[in-house]
Image 1 (cartoon, helix red, strand yellow):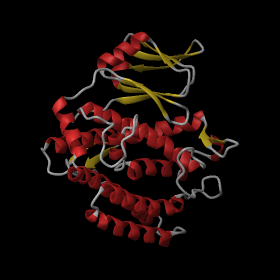
Image 2 (cartoon, rainbow, N blue to C red; image 1 turned 120 degrees about the vertical axis):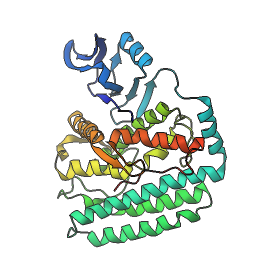
Image 3 (spheres, rainbow, N blue to C red; image 1 turned 180 degrees about the vertical axis):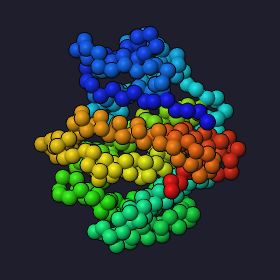
Length: 344
């Protein structure tokens, strides 16, 4: 199994990134602030404005398959630089034919939704095992039962629209008790509902940012195996929207991203002062909070788990790539179904 290299997150606005020998060096205001071995970096992600890369570094990244992505301070995608497209045309043609076939398309989408709902339930049940006497435990059990019933109806979904409706019902039940899993007292980290653009509370700000990074990772994995990240099966295709990356992300939202955010808050690794509330009500993270989140995200990617389908121990970052490869195998006809990832 291929080992996934580190992602270099650059959060200093106005930074200058360049290649110096076999190192990537970051300067700001003519002062060197960081240096990394170039062979250990598989992707560079720049957050904020005014960050620039030298032509020599850009050429090296294009040649070695290292992507450079640019996001604004809130994690919204701006642009991406990458080298030649990888993969072969036969795999992509199989992907496009599946997208045009309603029966095969809903089969892949159903696997993604089923795994998402089950992983959401596992997050709730895991919380109950660790905090069975917490306030709202009965509500969590009720939500879990409601989600289990929805999961059982997935096999009856006759089209993508009905499947999306069932996914939405399960998500509503899940997020209705999400606040019960936040153990920090006080109003600062209360969660009332999922708000995306813009996030209107601190938890939503953390979730949206984490989802943005996760979508980038999965997009890179899909491109690595030769799939087109813009042609998916569950999410509506729109210009510039990486629908297949978003499909694949459903498996990892709760078990990876949501648990990461809950851990940061419940373990008090972030605090309320690390956020800025705008006059419009939009909540943004400070640079320090973003660094804390990115460090925790990168650390979590390196943790090893047992892949339930491949029966092989691997880092979570490699699991992302493994799922992209399994999807490619299904689309080529090597696997009867897509074995979406079930987190235990």
